[in-house]
Image (tube, rainbow, N blue to C red; front, side, top):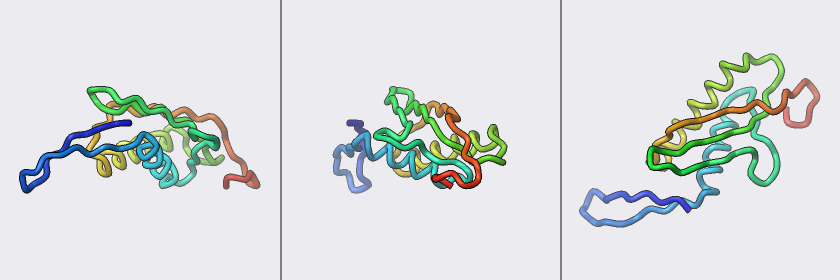
Length: 111
């Protein structure tokens, strides 16, 4: 489980805890927001997160739809993951590595 400490504006102190599966869900949501990109299926959906003192290191496997520019698509995935995690959790993201594991063609199930 990942933890982040946040002080409330009225002076109360407390701890906010995020289960790792919550952050995985945020990453999956970010991938689904990028047109032409799809998370892998399975238990962890191709998402591996390491919580480092410098920030989260995300290692993500994705499928892409044929016809998209892969480097541009990977960059959009990196930006979406970084923005979603930092906006929704107050964590910092140190690095996002994107690995394209499959290309989906017209008629494939995930399209």
